Each structure stands twice: as structure tokens, then as C-alpha cells.
Image (cartoon, rainbow, N blue to C red):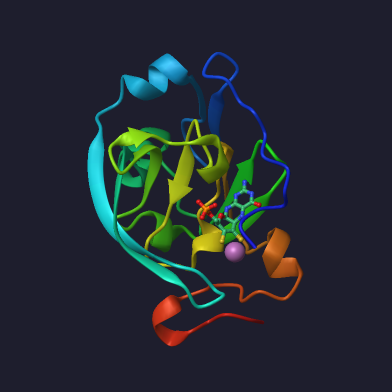
Length: 169
Ligand SMILES: Nc1nc2c(c(=O)[nH]1)N[C@H]1C(S)=C(S)[C@@H](COP(=O)(O)O)O[C@H]1N2
Ligand SMILES: [Mo]
């Protein structure tokens, strides 16, 4: 399952990324503000819960650590929920997002991120199964106690570490 079949067409003009919840400095970027941030390249493997992997993906975008350094999570913030333009949600511990290899990517393999893969921009959290990497990301919400997202409510594992095969509940 790659998505819910509803692949929202989000133009750069209508694109927004909001970070809110338990942060000292919530903000809301338009496309230009997002592009004006420092960019990183992150090469990582993709692990899907249905047992396929794709190695050495080259992502470009804005690092999670940079986003978090601007938003300044409050000490009580322990979990993150990503919201997509398609209504998708997924949850994870803040420490997995604040891990150095996570980013909000707008480019994959040297090309503009295609719509089917979450363009204009998606989250990439390499250390967790790929359902945690929200496509068409629109909002990053910081919360104190865990709140299951779309697949997590339907029985996928709450954490989703591929190394210990945390696939289902
Ligand atoms: N917004 C959003 N993000 C999503 C999904 C979705 O339905 N909506 N599906 C997830 C699942 S289950 C997978 S396996 C990956 C698929 O990413 P890909 O289409 O780039 O391979 O996106 C994840 N991110
Ligand atoms: Mo998936």
C-alpha cells in the first residue's frame, strides 16, 4: 500500500508547511520561505512494511533538525504527528525525527519530487518503516503523549523500527 489512492495535486503556490503544537515558535512556511532554508542531501534506504526495500535513495531538502531548531520544541513535547494534504496522519517519537538523517524533501534522485511520491514535499524518516514518511506534508504537530495515526490505528506497529521488524501492533 503506497497511499490511500488520493494523490492531492498541490501547487507550489498553494503549498504551506506549518509546525505547531508544543513549540515555543510555531510557524507557517510558504514555498519560497521553505526554499530559502539551508538545504541538505541525505542518502538512505527505504524499508517498506511489505518487505521490499530500495537502497541508496538520494533526498534533498530541509533537515528536521533545522526545522526543530527554529520551532524550539517545549520540554514536554515527546511525539510528532505529520499531517498530509490528503488527510493522512502518522505518529512517531520526537527523537526519531530529531535524528540527523530525517528531512522534509523536495527532490529525489536529483529530480523534483513527483506528485505520486509526495511532491511538492514529503517527510523522510529513514530509520523507520516508510509509512512513517508522510507524503504531501502540510503540518508537523508536536504533542506530549502518543496519538496513533492512520495506519497505526488500523494495526500497524506504533513505532515501526525496520531493524527489529516492528511491523504490526
Ligand atoms: N500523505 C501520505 N503519506 C504517506 C502515505 C499516504 O497515504 N499519504 N502512505 C504511506 C505509505 S503506507 C508508504 S509505503 C509510503 C509510500 O511512499 P512512495 O509512494 O514514495 O513509495 O508513503 C507513506 N506516506
Ligand atoms: Mo505502505
